[in-house]
Length: 411
Image 1: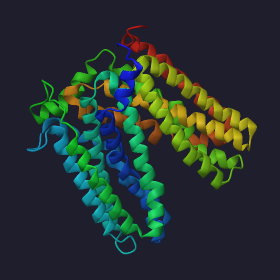
Image 2: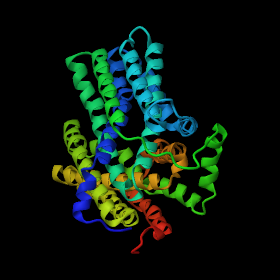
Image 3: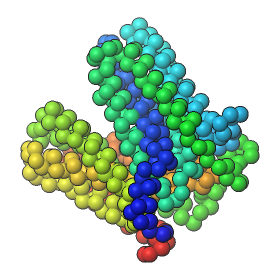
Image 4: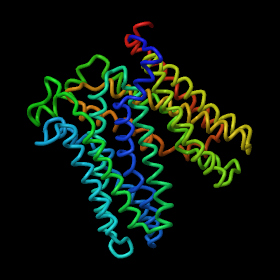
């Protein structure tokens, strides 16, 4: 890897490619909470049963299963705009129309209509994610993947903030249907970014049949000597950080922090710390390379997880809470930039949509499945030992980075 100068680094950060990654991240993150916590608030406001509101989490299933139809986007090209932009415009318009359909539904009288419309939103949104991830991998050089990932994640978080907190505020001022209509306009406006962005070049060897699109991505990946190592690393690299974050709000409440204190510090202050961490992480990856960044950011993630141990011993202390949240969110932003860049680097450009969808689905396993017993474990062994365990769980992922040593020309 040739280390770029600071002028080249700043040019890369301010390039049109990074602006596209940022805006596509916004388009990808916006629909997520509109079928999550914001929809739950609408259902609650309409008098829906609490058990039914909990079951509404199943609406998000397409995000986990998206690898099943990802081969379609590698195999087929629409008649206009190219393989990536054509599908992206179609999926974005479909998300906007599904949001309009959701706005026309009435939870008080037709819950099935709401469920079907919300499921269509997640289906088209997951399809949009597949194409956006493939576009980012194919339009950026290997050295730019970390920075591009950081820009994407920052845009994603802004989209989530608008749909989550912003959506609830707008629903208070207007109404839930009007808020969903406004969000549909935001998604529709993102089409302009897709139309402006250049179409990535089609790589030689791309699948010519659906069978090739389904089978060859998996054959190509699992023929690699490091295939199992890559999958294990994806599971382990952010495991400790993810498990610690999964149960942190009950932890704060147990220490005596109020909901207002948690909201102000953990959510709003932490949001900006994450954005700053992601941006600087992308820049550092461009400067020192992905291999060294995985080491540095992984170690900082582990240190920040240990901060919860210190907070558990300190108890109710706003300065301590602020410091722990700032460091944890900042290092989380660093680690996510390197992690998403790593997954991009692990995909073959011929099968980007399918392989990235598979790896990103695997990335969600710690968050969705392995986090399930965290509350029970913390209750059995106490908060201090629980967070010590989360810190120790970061070590296996760090040790596995040595298997990718050949990435660093200067190592």
